[in-house]
Image (cartoon, rainbow, N blue to C red):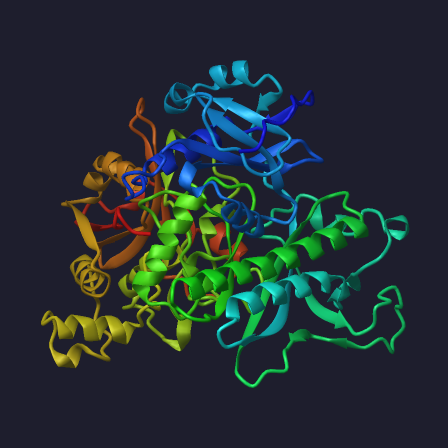
Length: 572
């Protein structure tokens, strides 16, 4: 056990609510199945030293507080974030790593989420939410490792070390904007190098894409045109029996306002080294578990409540049970929720043009977030999680006049993909029709027709293909839709899925409600599948295709049925 670090006299920022939530998330996981395991809880504190910000307080049972887990955590975090401290709870913990300070915590404080008690015991901290900021610089780097039979673990480790030592050779180029991030001395750095891109940026949305090149000369300061560059690095051994492991790593590093070119180069190199180390550790663990040498794919996430990105190499050839066990381990290790998907491949951020996507990248995602001029009348509750906007005339299908419910269904399905509940692609109109025939709800002639479907059919297909249960709200008129606004608000607070509503021979998607308890006034956030134009967010939000609608939007002369899909509560 390491000795506690000396007291730090500087003032740091910490988000105590995020810390309390991490503790709660860890406690939601069962303790070790080993009855003799030490169930003492300790943890690690990661942050930005230069800014004196705590970004993550990661709690762990004593059995998980190991140097290998520390290395894995660091290799998965953003390149600007490092270990800055440890923590003790009621004076007990295993201290590892070289932190600057040790947080003093108690179980009572953590269970009651007492901010005042924390600040009294840790006077060097200010409680403040850390804002997410900076653009994401993204570059694809390929590397190839040759692993001798019987010595794969040894060769993976040595290959990762050599790759890290050679990382100075990589140059990252953005030809469109004339940007080059490469090795150079701090004294020759260009100040505020990417400020026009990073000012006001957020890392999950604002991306600068680079192409990675490797210099074949040691003198990387030579900027002449005849300097040889190749897109990948190859590590080989002269051995007849080996496995060749090829990885395309997605190297992501932040660019903050005010960064110099040297800051960015240092961060790019650190991000590359972390990606190589993460690949190495996943590969070694797979070999130790008897799964052999496995290929991996890069995935970048913004988990719920996080203010920085998470970078992982995910195994691609493991069975679904093996992958689920691995995700459970990652959720526990990073203090993510125990009953909700966070790290499915479908939830990764498509930062690079070649990033893995399980939905159509041409579709608009979460158009309601672009509504900027709405003034709430009461308490607003909306869909929880991303979705894509499906509407008439997409995918080369002319479904104007009959396909609105199909499109609302597709929007709902996209929510289940993007929130990690399935990796099955969005069903086409024909897929939906065939499913209804397969379960005996429709005759064969229904397939390929232009016949409508409604709320009942949507429920059947979700249940058949995803095993998703749905709740129903049935009303006799539009006036009753308004009367059920509290039920809709509870749905968005708990389940969080889009709601399909059908009536008056039309289908719409409800994304949220705004309800004033005092006046009884309500409004509905509507996504309209009847739109036939192109994916222009300005047109869609300004012309009412995605907009807040008054209660009078629903006809008092027609009945309405609402389908409220219920996501599983035990999925990871």
